[in-house]
Length: 196
Image 1 (cartoon, rainbow, N blue to C red):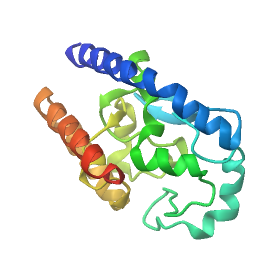
Image 2: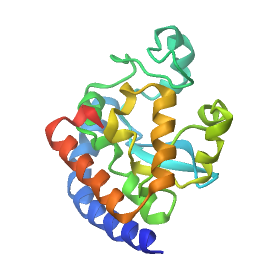
Image 3: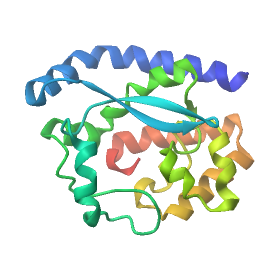
């Protein structure tokens, strides 16, 4: 209950900040590539399918293009898909991704209870299906806007290492650990936004 109260207060503070920059970001997206401004992405959190909201940082047919870019995937250690210079990113999207601004709308997901401020990384259903057996239980936990794996190397981590860190977090979670992770997240965002 305390964690949920903390999530509500934290998400409301994030939304207050988010509201002021939304018109600027929305206008930039519309100016470059038109509608929509937001995208809804399917993830697993708390053992159920949820749809997290982000500012659109890719071209409108990005998902359909994925199959033609699979050979460029730099993540060979698991089911994750990542291209360093993804050709699907718009110019505005590159800036949003670099500064992590594309993820601000997820504060609404936290407020609604789909995500927590801190938790395991939210993965797609197909990615979770590829979890080794000892990590299957991770999908039952509420995923986080940030988490131990995100502040420990993010996408640069091997897939299994990311899962190990998320499992460690769930086994040792506490208010103090959450505050440490949030503090490290804020520090990384201001010092090296690409590091989260």
